[in-house]
Image 1 (cartoon, rainbow, N blue to C red):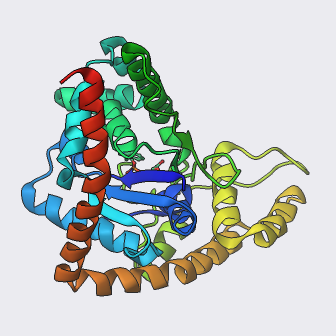
Image 2 (image 1 turned 30 degrees about the horizontal axis):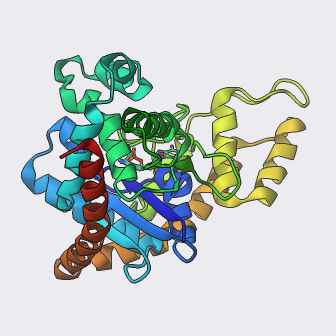
Length: 328
Ligand code: TYM
C-alpha cells in the first residue's frame, strides 16, 4: 500500500484554502492509502507562539481534522512534536542542504521580507524539517496546495542527495497528489490571490466561522465596477471571486454568473449573496462538529497519544535504517 504524509501548521482554525487545497484530499485518500496526517507544531515555533496558545492551537487543528472527516481508526493523526525521530532526521538533512538553496526558497524570502526582525535559522531550514516530516514515513504522496510545491521539490532534492551521498536507493521521490488534478490555489476574498491565515481578517473563511461572519466577509469581498464590453476578460480580483463560486457553489452556478458577466448583466451583489448562502450551508456542519469536539479535550488527547504511538513505529524504523546508512 502506498504511503501518504501531510500536515498543517497550527495557527488558529483551518480556512477554505486549507480545506479545498489539502484537507479534502486527505479525507478522500484514507481508504486506499496508509495515511499519516500530523499537526506541524514544531514548524509553528518559527513565530514563537506562547505555550498556552500552542496547546490550544493543536487541539483546534485536530478538531478541524476530525470534523472534516479524518478518522483515527483509518489514519494516523499525530502532533509533530510527539515524534522526536523527525527532528533527528531533520538534523541529518540539514547537513545536505546548502545556505544558497534554502535562502532562495520563496516562502523564506516572503517571510523574511514580512518580518525582518525574526529571520531565524528555523525559518531558513523550514524546508528541511518539512522534508523530514515526509521522508520519516518514506511517503509516496503528499496532498498539498500549490503553495507547497517548491517545498516538495526540495524534499525530492534532499532525498536524492542523501541517496547519492551514501550510494543507496533508500528514499524515493514523494509526489504532490490531487486525484489527477493540478494542486489548487484557493484565492482570498480581499482581491489577493491566496486565501491565507496571515493575510488579514477579511481574506479567509474559516471552517469555524459563524454565519454572520461568513456573510459579512463575502458581501465585502473586493470586486470592480463591472465589465465594460461583451465577453471581456476578467481582471484578477474578479477571476478570484469567480474561482470561489466555482469551488464552493459548483460548476452550474459558476456558468450561470459567467454567462451574466459575458453579457454585461452581472450584479456582483446577487452573486455574492448566493456565494454567502452556499458557504454558510457548507461551513455550518463543520463548525458544529468542531465546537462539540473541542468540548472533549480528553478524547482529543487520546487521539494524539494513539497517533503518536503508531507514527513512532514507522519513524523508529526509518531512523534506525538512516543511522545505519550514515555509519553510526
Ligand atoms: P499550511 O498550514 O500553510 O497549509 C496547510 C495546507 O493547506 C494548503 N493551503 C492552500 N491550498 C490551496 N489554496 C490556499 N489558499 C491554501 N492555503 C493553504 C497548503 O498548501 C497545505 O497543504 N508547510 C506546511 C505544513 C507542513 C507540511 C509538512 C505539509 C509541514 N510539514 C509535510 C505537507 C507535508 C504549511 O505551512 O501548510
